[in-house]
Image (cartoon, rainbow, N blue to C red; front, top):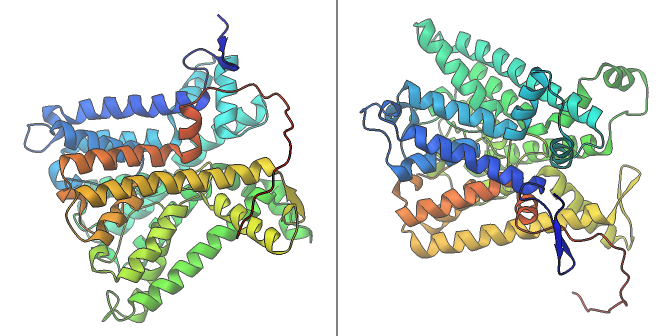
Length: 457
């Protein structure tokens, strides 16, 4: 049945909008996870989590955030932790990706609507590239998580002689790190292992691989790409991949340098130089969306917290497991400012012109994201007690789906928890997706209006 047209807008079937379908899919997983965590076997006391605790935890896991109101390892049972891990995995890769993989595995062809929806959500031009990307996502995810789990289990075996415990810790933290979720089975996250080079570097690599974005990693590991990269002078990498790698590398290096400078005589005081460097590196990596920590976040200086808030707002890269407004959005905004300062009408990147539509989208994401975050941060500041900077930090952490906390999360009021749940959901979907999900598509008719002059600056 065709959609009807009203007031110049085309109103299709309820699930014809890919962004809306994505939002409803995440919402469905959250509802299911909340129900499962409320069951008696989900908690160690056999009572099950109360509704608000279950809802908060399910949203945090599905939106790969990592904020918690109850200690994951102490409060939830093995069954509850398994539910959380499953929600992290499904939430990170996307429900639509999983359903498409199952359909392909069963030999069923994707329908026209499903294929079109996936192509729009994953930004793929044709069905062939879409199927190839879906296959790569599943293969890479489980391979990287498996290798990470084995390495972490071998390392943790030095701390925990029981192989079963070491393997369980390895699997849980490998999945949580690659999915940029930030959930840990240790009460203090990874503070107790800040001096272990193997754990710090393995977790860092898992977080970075998950946050780069699957299209980027797929391009990087292609044999012809690597071959031309080493044997030809001209780089074969796409503009998207170059932008992601440069912005990501810049944020990692700058974050590490600033953290070292700001915290040298504070949280890093008394540590050997090697551990200081590892701690600064790890917090620069994890602040972008992962949420693990090897130093006490509540003890950081105000300037450091403000720096981490900027990093959390930017987040990971498109097509990955992390949140935030994305590295490419920051890159495009910087390139736009450069073009404006040079008096150029076109925004250039690596010898190519970026379309005005792409620039408008980046500006829209940044503005909508800032508006959402500002609104919810103001509501939290008005309704929650505690240090204002700490409350604002929780809001940015929720929006960026990071999970770092100064310790204020368990003390949120019921209203505060509902506000953070909403912010985590909005942050995971992304400002642009959320905007598309609540409006109908308009006809894309070409229309030229008279020019207007507006003073700026």
